[in-house]
Length: 378
Image (cartoon, rainbow, N blue to C red; front, side, top):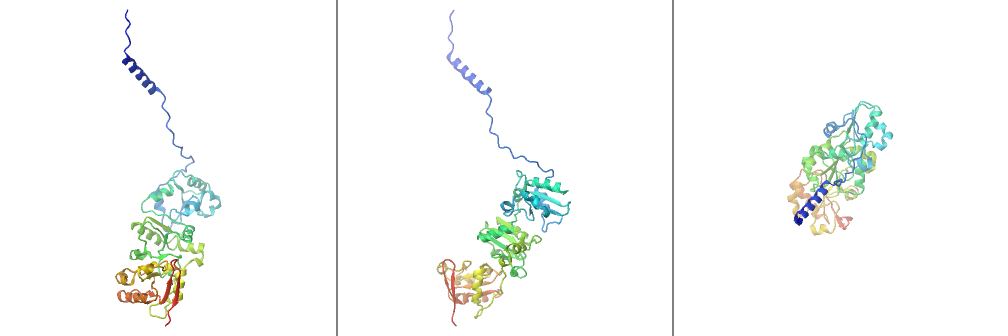
């Protein structure tokens, strides 16, 4: 009997199919598993961001307390829900005296989001103390800040630290100028009363990314919050409120770290400012006056006061209508000639501006902002 030779093509095809079947039947490799979320006991009464926002009022209701359970210096000081008090979970037992006496008061705890156990831990502790209306905002501060129109509050410690290191922030006093700001304000703060916000928006920086910090008279004062919302509507992207306000600043920094607006003392010439007073203001609180250097740009470039704006006298007349009226204006030059001309120009164009002065003196400027002022002999 004749034996038939196997067809080579059929054999090869069979081997390939067999290998494929073996590969398909093999156990697939396990996909790498994501790290398990940290496990902790979650509190039984969770609320959402709307619930929190409904209860964040200025002033806060007496029977409501919003509590930040995060570490104070590392988190709370840099930004927290307005009106919230800091009781870090790690310090809970030491700070229970800050909780309200009324055990039926609404306590809303929050921390750093869904993976953060601190608010849950604190809520259980409060419940054990006998508080009967305890909630946890589990989505926490990150969720609060994602809501359009919301802004953070910062602590007095954070504000003081920023000013001490000359950070690029703009501190704004939203209180009435003559009644409050002039009697005492945070050094370097500018006055934009909330009631006149629209009128003085030219005092705000052109750069919308600059950090603005509004303050007023403390936790019961709504003015800083109103102004902060207006600034957000204008497109500013880094708006904060120092909601503890001026009372907290005085308590923390002391009265020596506050500024009173000194009544401008006139010099010997009409419209001039007393030279000694001007020197004192420049050294101690230059932001309390608006200094305009009316020399030419080339002269200005060789040195001027650190806070001065350069508006050459031959360009000034067109800009007089837009000059701010929120603080005294002082014109300077090198000899008192052009600055005096600027003063009289304002009197002609805009006589309603009452706090306008010029320096009647010879001023020698240095690049570093230092200066030497010499009285002009009569």
